[in-house]
Image 1: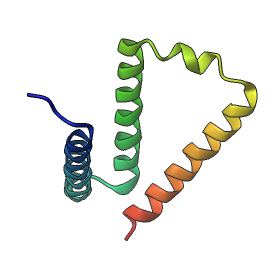
Image 2: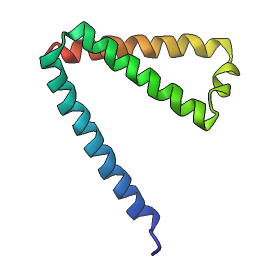
Image 3: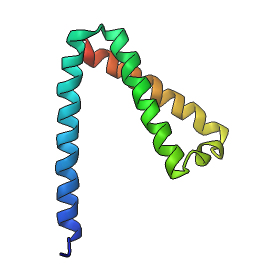
Image 4: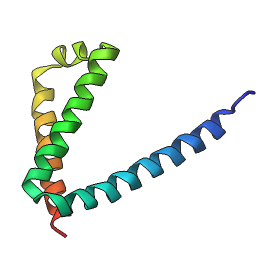
Length: 92
């Protein structure tokens, strides 16, 4: 069976919507069990772990070493903004 690119796109969009809704539901359920700072540590630690495992198996971690020094400031800034936005969204 041949899958067209548009059908594949719709399937990937559906999977991403289901994944995001699961993350929202289970993160709110986890907040009942733990405090916001503890949840934040778990959230970002598991995210970092998944990224590192993926980078290790795909051998893409070497591209991080080759980045110019100006990119590190942007990456740290994006990480800071992500932490701040997650902190504000969890307080509501």
